[in-house]
Image (cartoon, rainbow, N blue to C red; front, top):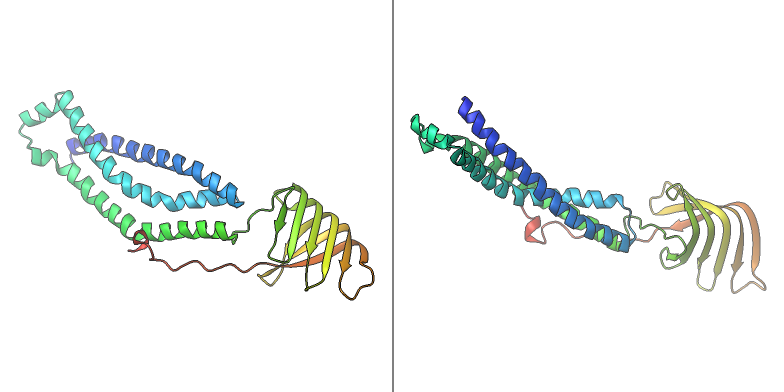
Length: 254
């Protein structure tokens, strides 16, 4: 490229990149507030907000690239006109077709990039975004247990935690009420506890420490009371509905 081409490329690049950054920041900030509110309402982890925003970036780029390119070219030639540089270039015999060579280069490259984003990246990203929304609503992302509130783990167990420490790795002041079989009831209070993984992805272990177990059933003359130091309580994770296949909406098709 000649020096004039490099000069035009810099004039176009500055407003182009600035427009893309500002537009992305404004759109992301607007959506971020709504996503934080949505995730907090559904009881999901905060980290999912960043994943959802990342899946929305291709859609924002698809909107911002044409606008940024138009503003970049307009502002570049406006500067040439207001500083009389355009008159000088025309005076030395440079035609408008020659001056438009760099804008055409930008247009071809960004049009190809926008086609790839809108035609291939955005459908998958939008589907992933809708999948995260579905998992939040269904609880498949592992909705957090709210401290001081009763949380239902499926249809047979209710859990309440008084205090959560170390990002949920240590739980204090635990109450569990379960109905493992029809007519049977089990209530557990424990000083502390923690969740542990098992080889079965549908089952987790809730290891309780320093507590009391009260078990009652139809054949018991009196409830059975057990005091324990450590007790492993298996919890069957509820089964969640599968998310729909991709392509149900036009924006998810490529």
